[in-house]
Amino acid sequence: MKNKTAGLCRFLFFVMGALAVSGCSLESSITSKSTGLSSLSACSPDQILSGQCAADAGQIVTSTMGSNVTSWSNAGSGTTVSASIPDGYYQSKQCSFEDLDLTPANIANGINVFGVLGTASGPYAACTDDVLNAAQCSTAASRYVYTAAYGGRNATCSTGLNAAACWTNAINQYTTSTAGANVNGADGLLSATIPSGYYAGTETATMSDTDLVAGNIRTGITLFGVNGTLSFSHLTASSALRDPGVKVIPNLTDLATTSAQLTLNNENTLYAGADLPTTGGYNYRDVPSMAVDDEGYYGTNCKYAPRPSSNCGTSQATLALRIADCQTANPSTNSWNGATQCNGGQGLWRLVVRSGANKEVWQDQRTGLLWSSIVNTAINWCRATGNTELTPLTFINSFNNTAGTPITGNGTIGALASGTGSNQETITITFSDATTFTVASTGGAGGCQGGSVAGGLTTTAGSTATYSDAGECSFTLTQGAVNFAANDRFTLQSVANASYSCAPGGPLQPASPLSYCAEAAGLNSDAGENWGTGSYFTAKGGLGKNSTPGVRWRSPSIDDYKIADANGVRFVMPDMGIGGSSRPAPDGSVAGGAEWSSSVVSFNRGGAWYFFAGYGYVYFNVRNSTNGARCVGR
Picture 1 (cartoon, rainbow, N blue to C red):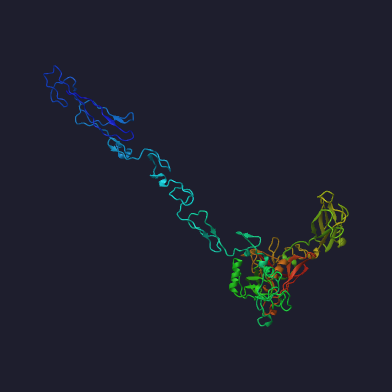
Picture 2: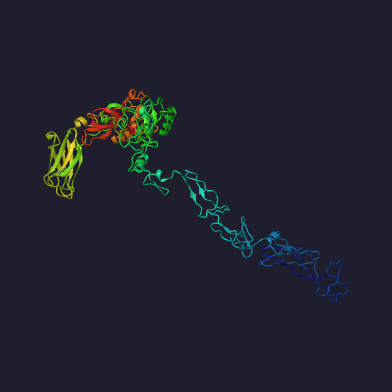
């Protein structure tokens, strides 16, 4: 029999690490043979015996062969693991534990567990962003760890040039090693490219235009700090008479002198208090010459525009393209410049459309307005302008007792209207006291006299009385805070609707009223036009509301004519001035005649002003007479 000394295997284990293997030591002691067993040989310690033997006291005897010990437990999750060694005899056996996680990568860096030196960087506390961490720490995937705060850039970047490495955040922050420089735009350009770089607040961006001067900016307007001085007088030439800018009649030696043109501003500043210039290319006169200082009708002192011969500007989408087309088609006859072609303050005109002989549209470059050729040679005023009204009852004056003395009260008269039976008459309303008035007419009982009153005036401000004479006239009087008084008078005037009414179905407009210029609601075109399909007179160059480009026409006012005449219209249009056969250079143009304006005569509402396109004078005629009609467009 043999004795066995049981030993406990103990193992050191780093809980978060792995198990290691350790051998078990067997302590054994064999006691002396027991008394009384002397007949048997003594048992040999630590071996399997082949025969009987005598064991001494204290010796362990077993018939069980021990096996390797491989299982373990760590109930307390501490640094020691243990295993029970079963009873038995152990010879050349091992006590070994295995854990596949016992690798360097699973053991903290610098720690030795069961002979395995760890290389793992954790576990440590999470690293703190953007600081120098005092102790080891753990970082997540896709992040960076530096040996110094912010990768050595431990100062916050300041705006501008930084003397040392620094850090900045990633939101709307830029870094550059390039210093910005002043930005200077090219002459006349509104924008320039700013190069990459940092701008410290001392650099400048400068856009320049050599035309940005006071004289090029309208007076009262400030552009980029430049106060404008340009006025009408800078843009319009002086109308003082001078020699023409060109020799109008080549074979007339008496017209050898020519003159450049002054602006009104030049006349008012350079020659203020002085004679007009007669040298240096100028030949102006303070005292007119009877031989040459005329209105130009005969074409000897103002040169008529030579007629363009090729159609042009008939299909382009813009006015600018039409003008350009006419420049190409008629290189020497597409413009007229009064500065060189005439003897006063005339301006520049450009051909927009030629759609046939004497069917031309020109643009006044000073006003921008388009001028058509004659659209009708003999038409009444209502059809020429498109007016569809009855003749008006108009206010003439008001006074108390004597003309020039204001009425006493502050009441008013209004809602003036005439009727279909209106006469040519003057109507007088006379007060006998604050609330009573009478109506008298130069037309007598057949005029606006003897009508009835609706409502009635009282001394209360705002009270009204409406007077009406059926089919003749009507008006409304309104009492003021200061009442009307005796001898307060109003004078009105009316026109005969039987002769001059423009109302549809009246004497001057058919039931479907016509308009030769204005293309407005309620009006109809002449048979020669079809507004709906965009078909317009050749005299208008085929232009109108529904053309491309769209042009809106109207009848010119008498002042439109006056301004256009000052700019030279009579020498430009093919149907103004003297007839073509009588011109110094005969052509096929048409002599100018009387043309309706849109302006009514204030002292005779039955009439309207007309412009005589031959000589350039203005006069008036009754609206039921016939004159030519021309249109002005925008």
